[in-house]
Length: 125
Image 1: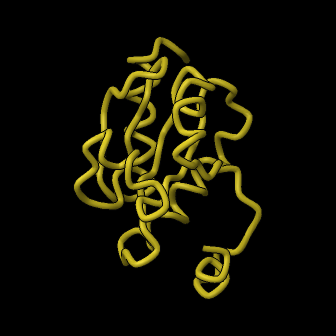
Image 2 (image 1 turned 90 degrees about the vertical axis):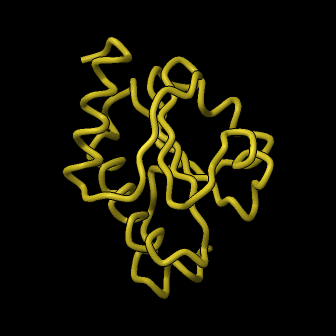
């Protein structure tokens, strides 16, 4: 993963937490709203979407109600199966630990609109 990020020019400090099968359940309950990016190293759209996801995560780093998590489906196949992930990238939103909504790859504006809508669902400003 680190080599791939370096090759793509996105080898920067991240605010997105990399989940494992063991840590995902805890991570999705760590904040009121948690966005989980299910991705794969071999996925072209994932390599284009990951920097957008990370950039939005950095812009919201001071918002303690929102968390950002990344799940490599090849490293965590049980998690992907548990949440019915059939294509990548898929962003699955958890509100109070419950999967609430999902979106596919999109632009920064689409991701920000998705988060704004979820803030209303989660009851946070």
